[in-house]
Amino acid sequence: MIPFKKHIQDIRPYEPGKPIRELQREYGIRNVTKLASNENPLGRPSTKAMRAMRKAIREVHLYPEGSCHYIAERLSRELDLPTDQIIFGNGSNEIIELVGRGFLSEGDEVISSEMSFLVYPILTQVCGGRFQAVPVTRDYRCDLPGILARVTPKTKVIFIANPNNPTGTYVTAQEMEAFLAKVPPHVIVCLDEAYVDFVDAGDFPKMLNCVREGRPNLVVIRTFSKAYGLAGLRIGYAAASKEMVAYLHKIRQPFNVNSVAQAAAVATLDDKFFLWKTKWMVARGRKYFYRQFRRLGLEYLPSQANFILLNLKKDGNEVFQELLRSGMIVRAMGAYKLPTWIRVTIGRRSENAQLIRLLKTNLENNQSS
Image (tube, rainbow, N blue to C red):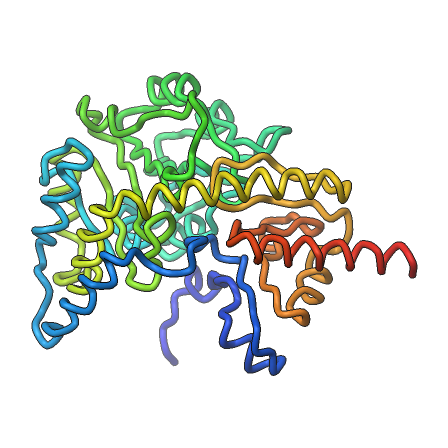
């Protein structure tokens, strides 16, 4: 008999948003709109990144630079951090995995919010650890005092997504400062800032300053998947102390970031207009959705990300399935114990309007039935 580990056998794998081509195959629908996976609303990468990718493709017969030299140098200037305080991964997910592999053993504890990125509990279970899920506050925010109250000598890692996925809520600079001051030095704090580029709140914490100050147990994780439109290339990074980065380098696989992704990331950092247009489109889309949701009488959570959590006050999975049949992919929230909610990514203007039309039709049909 194969000696499968029980704690791994019991894992419920992460289910990503439904791919467009899968829906086309299942329903025979040609025109599909995907507002499910929080991808870039422009619908394409930067033109500069596209040119860099075409050039890099000519050398894909060669191994990539294991040190990610050029993107490290470019990002170092962007973040005002030395290159030895930056580490790259195959998406920010790999950075999260490196932290788990580096610090978790069987029986260790990980703490995070009850409504947060589903990879955190999965990773904990893979490592044989125990995941502590702290309920969110009444306004669906991460309960930092509640997390502190759960810390024990067995606690090794705390994951905080800020802005949080799937709620879009955030913790303030003042709250984060008070929290970090009380976290024991033996606990690694991973701040997942995958959606930081969409933030416009003035009191949002500037966590890179904490890295510059030399906090030894802090890891700030970011990605090129969202605002920079490189989700399919899988490239993310973390900023941390020199000692932390050197330690995580011992764990990562050689050549973990492909050469096309490295070239694209360098180029897209130089395309400031692309990033500005992305942020502008998300900010405008948020306001549009807020206005339309109020008109439809639907509850929603104000968001600092490129998605909005929406309460339909009915079975969210049923609405999800109905939208699928109409060629619209959103995200049902049953996995987060939010059965009446869906998460909607902000897309292009026409895509946002299409979703509102479909939701309006759905509500009208339910009122007449």
